[in-house]
Length: 480
Ligand code: ADP
Image (cartoon, rainbow, N blue to C red; front, side, top):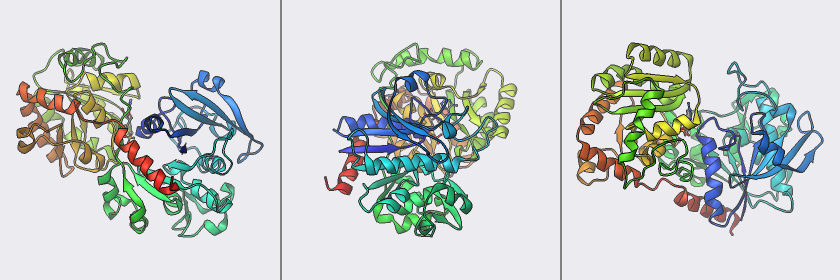
């Protein structure tokens, strides 16, 4: 089975969030099941120069939406990459989606139409005598793949479209249609039109052979008005070809026994070493060297989705119960300012670093007791999975993949010794406050806390099961 992934990010090469981790991990898990996976991503200026210079040209386009382009092929970190080199579209500083002022690049519709077009082209023509049996398109940036295929050939390979976050839909004015080369006939509610706009994710969901999202609970939530963000009706109409498959983590990158970003390695049978990492976290965040409550951490985009405004209201409770907080994140300026103000107010108890720092995120998972994820919605969430693996117990809102992956330490779960963290609902500051108080109480019983940690660390959070599920899906679409 040959499989082409089309995506806008892939860790460790380019990452702004969980999508990258998934795209970097699934191919390796599928490789072990005998699937040959190639991953198509744009060749951004921020990619490592060595990566780009060690890649070899495998295809050339004289004019890809306004300029020449090449496909470069390279094997790196166990992944078969195809880099779409199109300097007029991708060779610019900063983030894949926004410029230095956090404004969307004005030609995003063209940039990701080009990515989708090349994905479709590879689906039809293959590359170096390799032909994909299935194309797996991820998020709106790859949403036009099935549209390009449909308008070009009746013999195209099947497309699986995965929704990693329905909040990002790739909606553009109708006037963009002509530039994308998508035919007028597809600009209908049965194609890429979304209420007189051009909808990349909408078109992907409508025209793909199968649609998935990243957890079973989120797949059910997406069928509702509360979570579907306008696409719930369309998803309901595709319910028989739509399911949630839970994300996993790359256990070679997220492993407290070998993690190069931490000094003191540990595993479920040797938890003591974990606590030696706390000092490094406290030092980095300017926290007092000790506290009698838990050391909480947050590693997150600071956005409304992530519910961290609720945490602001809970900070007095967290500090008064003896806790400390280390927060690493970047996002909405008001939230950044609010956390920085809290760090001033609670010096030694709250430490805040505004920024994006991959190595520090590993250290925090290793050297904290609790990771806070109070999201209003969460398709899957990865930081709670890293928390489980590192024995850093997650406090999660009961939504999406958070609900599917963390077992609340309620009395029944504690008695059966199956708890792995803490859930709260509804997603309000009051409920979170109560949970923080509950956590402080459980934390004060070291035996119970350690047994939850150990159980959390023993959870299977890898890709093995979900990779098999994906393979079964690909096989059912190709009858292989
Ligand atoms: P989302 O994709 O919605 O942002 P996920 O939980 O699925 O949320 O994935 C977030 C990923 O990004 C995780 O790997 C997390 O460790 C990482 N991350 C988020 N913010 C930061 C940050 N400020 N510094 C380093 N890593 C971060």
